[in-house]
Length: 265
Image 1: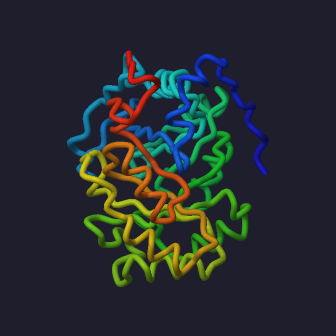
Image 2: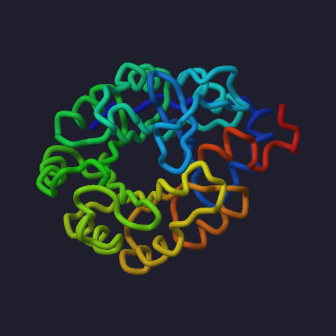
């Protein structure tokens, strides 16, 4: 198992200000999409059009500055990182991952895992949980190798969708529900359901019906979803759909969620 990261305690005054978000019915996990060494703004999975991110909580798209700004404002230390360079086979952000974990951040990372060695590199950087996505995973054998090598609690399978349809080699002949069933049959209970077509659109979370179906069929799974979050009501809707945690990027960076005393800087 990886060593525990030291939790950072926010001052009492800041904690008092943050109660609207801290009292959310489900866990909120901030998202940083990394490309070319910076945080970018993901929209609908059209990666060639991604632009440097502008966040209300950082004066630059630098990953460390952005993460620190969000943590200082909200107290979040658990982040989801999509290493888009690694996902597309154009390098990686392993040094950035190392710097973030050394700064006390707990990371869930999608680095386009295609082989166990890539997961090992993430764990060596201090990553707490590696995301294995159907977009890039070449075979079930690779997933089985990972599960036999690492603690399954450190592996999460991402059912990657595009407009509701499974995306990637494993999903070519399967429905999203069938894909989930294949994963659960391998005794992996940590799941992420993500439709990239909804990411950054502010159109609402499109995976909630699927989340309800998965929760009903597999009540013991830990379920994360995201993409398209608009406002606080989406948090309540996700909770009602059986979601344990919600990934949020644009709505958090733009300040569209309820914030302390509605007095955002």
